[in-house]
Image 1 (cartoon, rainbow, N blue to C red):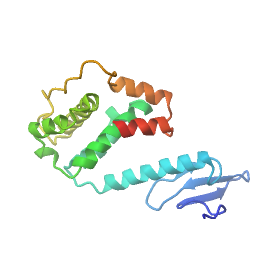
Image 2: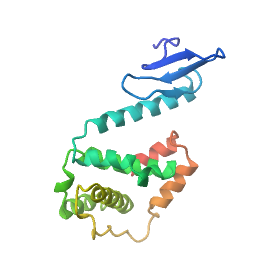
Image 3: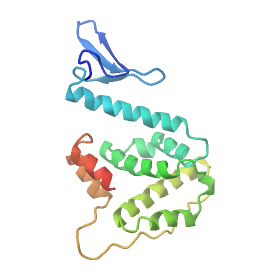
Image 4: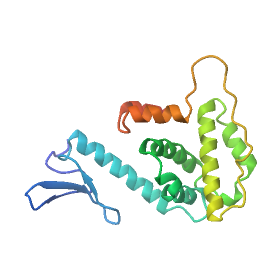
Length: 198
């Protein structure tokens, strides 16, 4: 059983000039992130988990070799095309991009061919909307790679989206997902369930 008086790992409290204790997620080598409320409270732990996830992403990004898909994704996160998006859209994009990075992050951007992209999309043909969203994210990444001078072409150009099945339930597109995320917070169970389905 955890000791309630002991804060979670990497959490530090400081008394400000007004005598109020302020808590931060503070791991050496990473930015200090403020945490609301008191240690172990729901709001505190939600912010703590988000800070820890951001740290893990940063660690993964820092280990990406130059010229790889992982490095390209990291670069895209810092580009104006991404930073200028709404928070809900960023969350949607990041969820798809991270799946792509996890599966292909160590591969060279320059070696990606049209047949590779086609194979990735074909493998998702049982989920047409997810395949279409993945294709869009690959296209955005390749456009960013061209801007960086890493490639002279876009191997995702001309790849066809999988056909939707007629009848049954409506398959969500990117705008449906963004609207859902706007309604349900990123820390909600509904948002987590959606991310597992994509």
